[in-house]
Amino acid sequence: MTLSEAAVPPDAQISTLRKYTLLILFCLAQFLDVFNFAAIFVAIPAIANDLHIEDANTVWIVSAFQLTFASFLLVSGRISDIYDPKYCFVAGALILGVMSIGCGFVRVEVPLFVLRALGGIGASLTIPSAFGLIIRFFPEPNEQAIAIGAFGGSGAVGNALGVVFSALFVQFASWHWLFWFSALMAIPIAGICFLLIPSRPDDPTRAKASVQSLDIIGVSILTIALVLFIFALTSGSSVGWGTARVIAPLVISILMVVGFLFWETRVPEEYASLPPQMWRIPNFGVLFGISLTPYLWWTSTFLLITSQWQDEFLWSPIKSGIHFLPIGIPSVFLTVLAGYLTRHVKPKHLIIAGGILLITSTGLEPFSATDPTENRYWRFAFPAFILGTSGATLVYCGASVAMFLITPPKYAATVGAIFNAALQLGAAVGSAIISSIQSSITPGSNANSFTGRADGFWFLFAVVTFMTVSVAIFYRVGKTPVASAPDAAESSTEQKRSTEDTQA
Picture 1 (tube, rainbow, N blue to C red):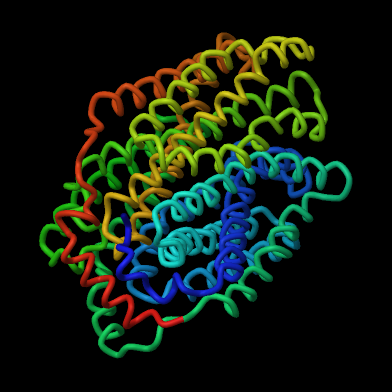
Picture 2 (cartoon, rainbow, N blue to C red):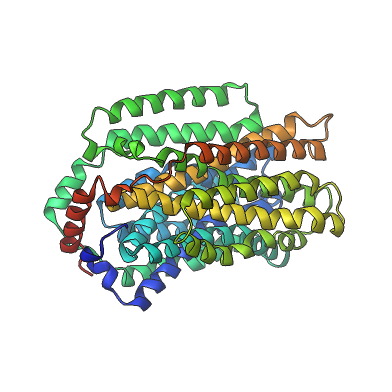
């Protein structure tokens, strides 16, 4: 259990209508965060042509958002754990909305990149705070599993519908509406959540302690390291992996991560931005590793197939978007099913089942784009999309639920940040490596030929196979969740403090 029935916090006692209204709003925020990443793929040609962006720089239309989003997740998680996550979530949604308005009006590439980066920071504020609020409002394990599953599934829907909406905007209006649509959703979400989310009462002791426990030095070192690391990965496919622009930030980032780990051993555990004791929790490291795969599969599939459909098969954006619907629509139903399964199936078995589906799907994908006919699509791409999104959703739900079950409630936002950082890191690493494979292994000068794409899919096949086998070998079944055994006394104390500090 995440919380005992004897100590249900006041947050969980708000009306059912209010709780589920907030859950819908949190899911819409998650939808927007993923939408702002996935929808750009279809719109890149139109944006680049309108703003006269060179081919080598178009990667930053996507990467500017992804880089700051992934890099600031841990900072956001720390802030959400220490301060009231309500204001963190509202501020993040508001920043995303305002930056999206600006993106729709810019006419020069550099301001667009800057605004996209700032929007990524806003999006990063919403994820850990939403996780923390979901854990507070849904302490009962069964409800919590369903809520977390719905939250994750909304991201999968954003992945698919983002492509469709982007195609509609580009073909029938303009790419500017892609950003204005985000603003029209994000700003009302911020306002409604400001009114509906109950605030924690002011506590001078908490405020004083929170300033001391922010771990500014540790957070700064890690954030800069992640920025440099993701910058190197996203630059490699465009400027070359052997250039100083890639090697220098990559080496510096690794050294800074080592320095961060050393620093974390020097500060008190209660003040550490990445609590070392979390990594000693059984299965936490395994769950972090498997969390790299869901967004890796989704992003790689979009990256490898979208460009071929539009550039080689000359499909319209609308036709491409519609053919991607099998990736998103099943997630709506699968999240409900996954929420039910988490109550009856052990997380290890759920994750392995998802991994097997991903392996099967990725084995079909290399054969899905060799022919532009519908027969080839229905024979290979369609079943690959259904199986792959089913597997990715099961892995997502199983890993996220298991992570929260084995960690203390006081780390809810930090755990949410770590989990989502793994998702984004998988997407960043996968897109960079697969882009490099596609351009370097392809024979001759035709970078769009099928051979390079097939090699990218076979790399993805190897990754998901390795991850699934690792879970089967290293995930230890039967270990007592932290929140219910070793830290039972601590959890009880935290629950009592929560009852005092979190009045609705």
